[in-house]
Length: 143
Image (tube, rainbow, N blue to C red; front, side, top):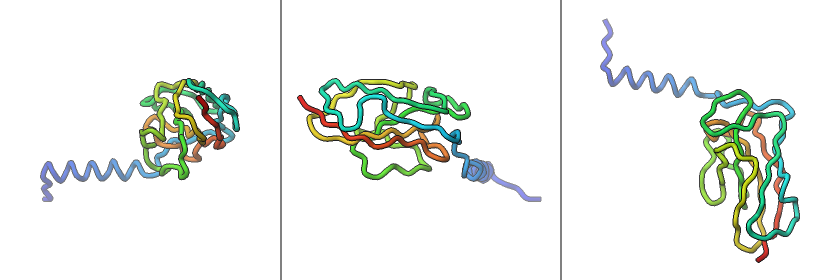
């Protein structure tokens, strides 16, 4: 009779759970879009910068809430290469999480030229299967 130690049983369970998570990304609804309401592409702005995000076809929820066709916004600032779409979006000065389900906010940026882009992600901060990414916009911040 095969005997497994408790350690081996836990390892098999963990491997099983990891394997079952492959291709388990949350789905986005066909035709869904994410976009900036404000600021507008090419706009010159002053601090505090008013942000407003638009979303069609999906539900806006807080991070941690696992509902179908839902998620929350992430603001990408001066990001040249999108993050890995199979992993949680990083949280740093260039990847701002709006995990409370916000569709508007205020940010402060030093004077200069910036690109902004929205990336919508699921309850685990992972972009959906068929990622929802806004058009990248450019703004100029002045004093």
